[in-house]
Length: 367
Ligand SMILES: [Fe+2]
Ligand SMILES: [Fe+2]
Image 1 (tube, protein in one colour):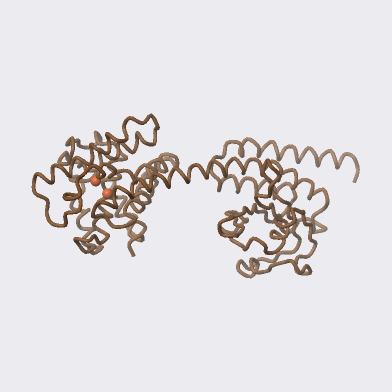
Image 2 (cartoon, protein in one colour; image 1 turned 30 degrees about the vertical axis):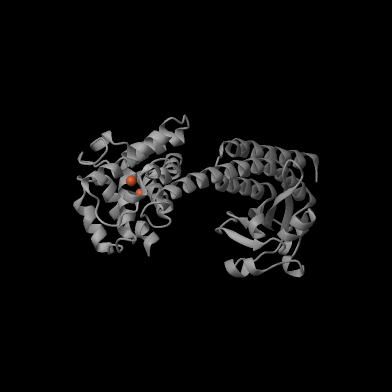
């Protein structure tokens, strides 16, 4: 190869790296990160497909969200070229996969794809431990297999990717832990009452859907999803005799029951964390009605925070659609009728329109 070819190659590679680095640095979501890195790897070595496989220690599997043109895939940890690289830490550069006994052709069979040339390099964290594998498949230009230079380029990308993924994995671990703790807290409050199992989990998922359909940003929708399990936290302060009563409340009992909104707010409001502030807002506002007939403050219209308006719809939707110890689940038609009648009364019209428009998606949790 002459010198000018080498130079243009180097320039091309630098351009690629400079165009991807800022995007990778800004990306906060793991899926997005995996896509960008796979794209970078694919362009660098001229592969048809490229994917980053990460180790899932708990399941003894490797998983990837991205293989170009394919959804999430999972494979046993010790399988195929990827498994070999995880086990040994060695890079592999294979000319014809089907002539190599280590090749596992099941992915090809599942996706009707034909793998020929393969390149795998290990992804390591800052301590040198293997956290995954970078895999490129099918070199697009002659001679249709990867060169030692390609191994070098993908290895360099792997060093950078490994460190970036390590910090993203740590962030994800923290976020997952936070979400789980909030969910457990919410479940504790529901567990004492007459709610069914998983009520808070379903409410959180449906709040997220509603927020997304409304056009809120991914970040805002996710914050609502995380805060939603705490909407009934104040029930921890309601006496068992009332909370677990299966018959109708007396007017006095109902007054006590209604205080779970302010109690929840009280427990959460002193936190300086934005997420818990949002949870406090949802705790106090989720029984307010659009027409001002709700409690505890009798707020109406847009004086009720949007997060609470969303939670109000979803909370009632879940209560009606699932069976409780004191009642059967309502039929789909009955639930639909109820919400249509409550447009502009108990609930904001626009939110009910969204619920009805995406009915199948919301109701799918109950089938
Ligand atoms: Fe409530
Ligand atoms: Fe609830």
